[in-house]
Length: 310
Image 1 (tube, rainbow, N blue to C red):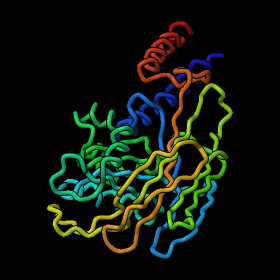
Image 2: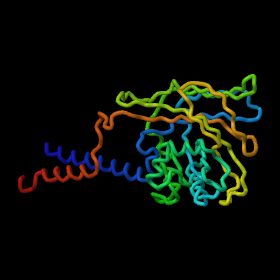
Image 3: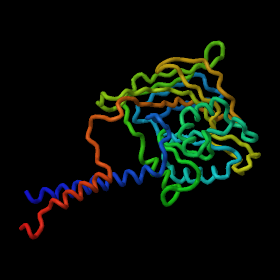
Image 4: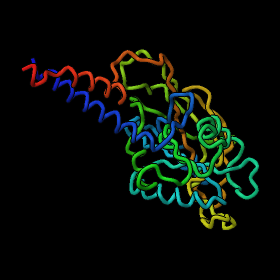
């Protein structure tokens, strides 16, 4: 029976190490949705060329790629630094990138509109404002709709390492099911978009939480040339031109797609947000925090038999 305290000490040390490691990792970013528990489940994409008439995509959740959202501007020199670090972190990985360009009260940047600003501020504005005092900060980078990185100062050895860690962390929750997204041209020449995400659900038996899915229709241009951008990039990638919050998990809508800035490279993107609500404390056991671990360790060490007692 004398080995029991030693086993408890070992277990508590392991728990403490896990807690500290998780704390150090999460300190690389801030929660992107302040006051809310949510993220981006994934996205489906359909290219919209001049020849597009009817197209449909059906993906299982496991086939959906991670989403990285970036807030930027054509005058933002720091954005060049963060986007280069993001390129290095992503490498050859298949990632959906969406770049929001500053629009409101903007003297130079020609991209974006009030709807793209609304999408960013309504989703990430509170977290940005709490951390930086502004609801729109260029550069900002958000992974999976959950983890926000502001500015160019790394929290670890490099900014690339910060971003790589965020990418590897992945979504907080796993889902199951399929999502459908299609585009068709009506007889009158209008473009109709249809979606169905009713089959998606969280892959967890925890009935203590309620999950809500919210679909968005986004229009993203692969590359837009703007030589007048004062940060010298000239060709701006993954440019978000419009954002529409869709009503319901299933439906159709006639939408006039925004024209490409240049070329023929706009895509329609069905982005799916998730949010969770329920009890603030769930029923499962949790690991003790580092402070509690230290107290318990002291108590256990004090209770160990001394040589004199033997």
